[in-house]
Length: 329
Image: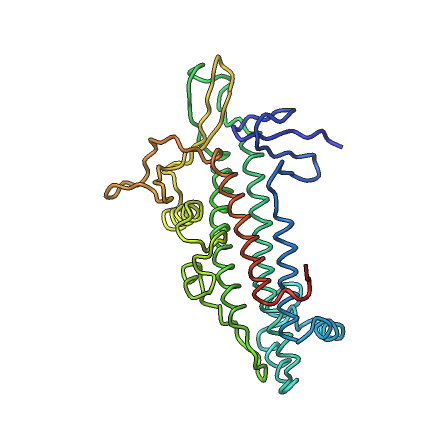
């Protein structure tokens, strides 16, 4: 097995870990040294799906019995690309069943499961992007010449390698905010589960976004993603909006490289100055000030870990909302 190389928060790789935070690639998987609770989030999401099924079918065993003999189009048509079914074919399949409450329950259950599953996939995706960001920052030199112009100073690099790195950062923040949208949808849907299945229910949360969390009972609930005025959440929202609406949080993507005696001792990406609430500081049309030396690679682990904790707490509370009867503790 390949000996792992440690990717450190300062952008300089090492054979042995140097910081409180590091990412390591052993050639098979990328590991985070601590605070990686994405597996717990994933497992609790699966448990949440089962709790919802327990309510809809008035017993988890009843759900399992219906699943045992169901046709594959019920969970996958219109949701998963593995099944080749058109919208028109799907309508015919449903109509062929006539009024069938069990079918409608299954269809709705898998719609809700898809909501939760999409959130799960996004969490795993951002974990990968998070790790790849540090791997790429550490392993790429971004140097166009063997030696820096200033042997004791800071210089920046731009170009295709930097653009590739920024594309991961942009994708990361867009996905992080999408997860907030999905948690708002999941919370709203769970709080408004239908009781009538004479027809196939449409998801009530279809138009719900994170900003609509005030419509849920979890609005401003402490330790969740919905807690009021959380700096990290606001910063995710701010950077996502800059990326979506203004293409980037930086005019020209740059990686800065710090040298001492011709040795690179640090690589970093600057973030625009932001206030205590996570809002980018602006003056009229100018909103990319870089005077506070805020380095993305320095603050990103705490931001991600805090979000994961809040996501796990949010899912745990939602499990209690639907009874927490399948997995009693």
